[in-house]
Length: 108
Image (tube, rainbow, N blue to C red; front, side):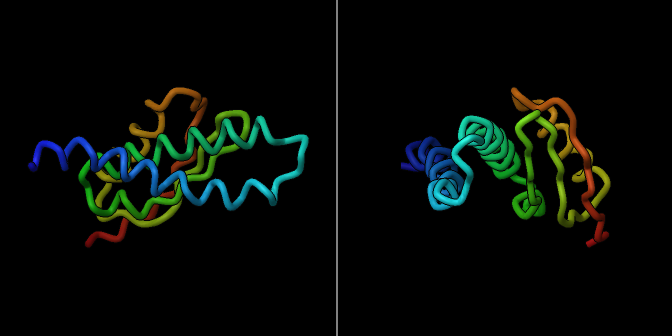
C-alpha cells in the first residue's frame, strides 16, 4: 500500500501545482500563449522538484520564470544549505538558463 502511495504522491503533487495554470490562461494576451506555456511548465517542474526534495521549507519557495528561461526564487528558507539546494534544483531543470536566488535565510 505505501509503495502505491509513494508512486502516486509525485503525480498528485504535479497535478495540484499545475491546476492553477488553467485559471490564468484567460488572463494572458493571445500573442504570448506559447511563451507563457513554456515558462509555466518550467515553473511547475521546479516546484515539483522542490517539493520532492523533502526539505519542508523548500515547499514555500516562490518560483517565477520568464519566457527566456530566467528564474527568480523568492521566499524564506531556514539555512544557507537549503538556499543553495533550491538554486541547484532550479538550475537542473531543463529550460532554465539562469537563476536569481533572492531567498532569505531565517535561521529557524
